[in-house]
Image (cartoon, one colour):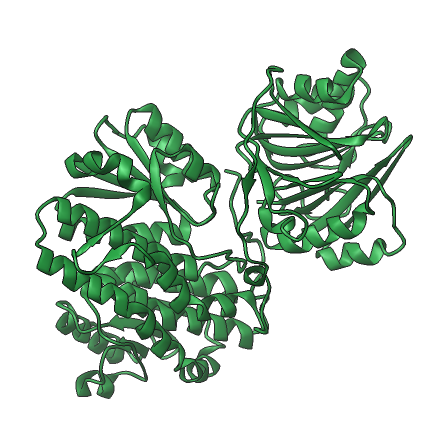
Length: 609
């Protein structure tokens, strides 16, 4: 959830750390800090607020030294200067930054306070740096002290530690929270996300759970927590720097909405076999027979990815003729789910690092299921730990509210559906028809984006609303959920999504002249029912915003606002109907003066439970 960056080499550390923190600020932005280690001296500066607030305090620092930096999303302890990372030991010799949660921190803290340690913050992290200080009494060196301390810790962590006694190195370790090491010439880097270091190197090493690394300017040594040497492979990161810049747009979210025609093409490139009426997904080649024979598929995800999974469930059951369940990954392992050998579990996650989804992966694997990933970040933990999977190729998504990842997930789920359906008897002709419909999507999304100014005008009229209701049927019920989530995330307006038929079972009580109701009404088999739902809303004076394929006189007479989207196959319609809802949320939030890319209380990747 938080962001980590580290540097050791022959250059001044502060500019590198600051640039890395700016790249990582979407992962946490309530406070930030850095620490630098010189011989006999530890320099620590931290500040509540954005990285820009920290930068004002650092203008005079031009120190060549090992350094670590952190941008925080608070778990234990409210945002403040004191609770910001890095945290230091009693002697101000050791500094530590941490992503994750130390679950037994209270017991550790209580014991250490009895032993004379003085704590300053309300965080779980500070317990770990004092524990390392205590272990150093017995070990003598920082690496061993970190290892001994971590063997007493329960919970998750990605940490970086420096010391004024050993100022030429950074000690890093991970368990459940991602860390990568960047390899340079006479310098090395550490980060929780490749975006922080791609300005300096494309060569990286992924640290695995249970590993510890000693990073010096000319060497990187990795071991297990039990002190066994591990061999690591250097890999290439392929992020395009232009993808992590705004490129002239006001916000990353708007840029990412507008990128969707291209990201959909990227998700399909080389995978849609039009002549064969099939999909080629190389990451699933090793499990084709497993997919063909699966009696049950589980889709596990959180947030926006769960909404994509719900659409995927409908697709797979209709065309793949297989029993499918969509599970909240955050609930999956806590209810002792029935998972058997022969089941297939897809884990859907933009980052590939979502803590709850990773926990679901481990639970499913332990019970003998085939585990497959659908994620965006190459080299992420889900990608590495799965039996196979598919990258969505959406490129870096910096805006906290997911947009392009959602539509790319839908396309990948469509391709998985096509692959399984062809295995199970779908005709080549029907497969070709689906391929043709898929290939039309980017152009149709572009057509919707060209009408953004129409949606902006609607946003202007509705920006002061206190509540919204989103209604959809069939494949567009998950779109109603996702549209409501987008509005909640970035505008702070209360919004709920419902199956349209469920409106009569409670939510209709909320409808009055002040309640905007977004109705997703494509020309599908539920169309006549949706018209009835709109009539029920208008009978109670609600304001109707209708997403339609064509201007039907019946809907035109009822709706206050009409937004047209092109027609497509029913199961692909969510790729199109979500676009105006993303734009509506964006423009409403802009007009309310909200922080679009960094909404309050949220961060991009949820790497803690």
